[in-house]
Structures are given as structure tokens and as C-alpha cells.
Image (cartoon, rainbow over all chains, first blue to last red; front, side):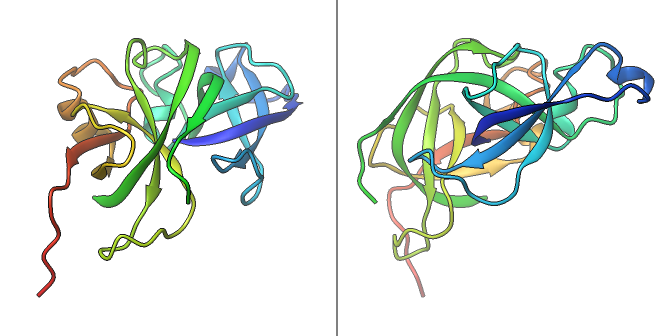
Length: 91
Length: 90
């Protein structure tokens, strides 16, 4: 899992059947200091996170399982909304 | 499996299914000498690891489900599976 910031929403009308009714968001990966790392990705969001919120997301097959259907072609999903990050060990 | 050091914790109330009541740690990957490498990531704790511990992390779904001992935790992929006591290099 990685930290990420919701930077936008993605609207798609023509999509695979299992994506029907799902919210897609743009996620910018962050490090533990909330600094951007790497390129933004598109993830499925079932938790109704808002733009600007810090979340954590998971990639690969496990991400697809946030959707109730057994099989679906999803490879990134928001797994939780971050309330607070406590870093106590300095790098 | 990857070596890492626990550098912090995450507080989160709204979580996806499979993540309820699980402790999430911030892990900084380290090399065998203990030097920090790469970017930090998050993992679910299964061994009561704490900040400062060097740990063994797994990033694979089936192994993670075995580590959390919940075969229905389909959304779990990254877990802390052990606390490292010592690394002996030949």
C-alpha cells in the first residue's frame, strides 16, 4: 500500500460492465511526509473520498476485490482514508 | 519478501472491507546493513511490530491472507509477517 492524494475525478461513460456505477479518482502517490512521488494513477474509490484528501491505496488483483463482483478488471483501489500519519522514527 | 523498518503508524477510520480493526504501519525499506532505500509504503501488522523494529514484509495477496489468518480478507495484499532479530551476512 502507498499513501496518495486524491487530485481529481475521472468520468467515463463507455466502460466495462463491472465498472458500472463506480467512482474513479486520480491519485497522486505520496511519501510519509506527504510529498508527491512518481506519477498519478487512476483508482476505484468505494469510500467516497473527497478531492484533496490523503488516502492509502493498493494495487494489483486484491484492489479489484473491493468491488463485490467475483471477476473484474480493476488494478488499483482506495483502501482507506487517512486521518493522521504518526512518524516517530526519523529518516 | 522485503526488509523494512517501521517508522510510524497510520490513523484511519474509513476503511475498505478486509481492513477493519487492523493496525497499519508505515514501513521504510532498508538494505541488509539497515540503510534506508527507496520510498516508504504501508503494511498491515500481524506480529505486533512497533516503531523502530526491523521487519519482514510480504506483498502478495494469498500469503497476506494466510498471515492475517482470514481467508476472506480478499483485499489485503501487503502485510508485516515477522520481526527481524538479526541479519547475518556471510
